[in-house]
Amino acid sequence: MNRNRFHTSGTLRVSGVYPVPMPPVIAGGRLLSGGMIALIAHDRKKPLLADWIAANEDALRPHRCVATRTTGGVLAKRCPALDLHLVESGPLGGDQQIGALIVEGRIDLLVFFTDPLSPHPHDVDVKALTRLATVHDVPMACNPSTADLIVASPGFATLGVT
Image (cartoon, rainbow, N blue to C red; front, top):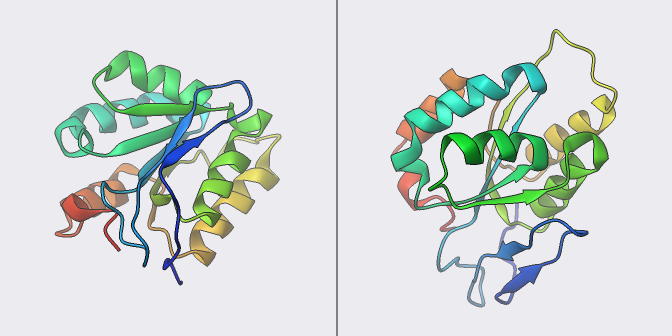
């Protein structure tokens, strides 16, 4: 994937929710302050994601994070020091908003704790989001074991520098 893009510093306005900051970059695509980590969990997996975030809060604190509204509310209560920005709830378009951030090259890691045993009315949005992460070569963790491996990897501390 060619992440060699040029963005200016600024803010993306997300339909009446909270602004999502665009990470500053220089020409040639090198990020100056790192990209964002997207955090999403299906309803039955939100407590599991909150536990994982709390256990890895020190590693995540230097990174900007973006979450869907419902997931973000749970995470903000558990880890208020996290640099967390919210988009809409998943079924209301939040998955698509994060997908757009992936396409724009502003998401460097997708942590999406899915619940494959429960039906989801917005399942097509979920599939589109995972497809975009795959197409744009964004690392994706769908469970704590994979997320642990990514956080423990040598490149995690410099996540966002391409």
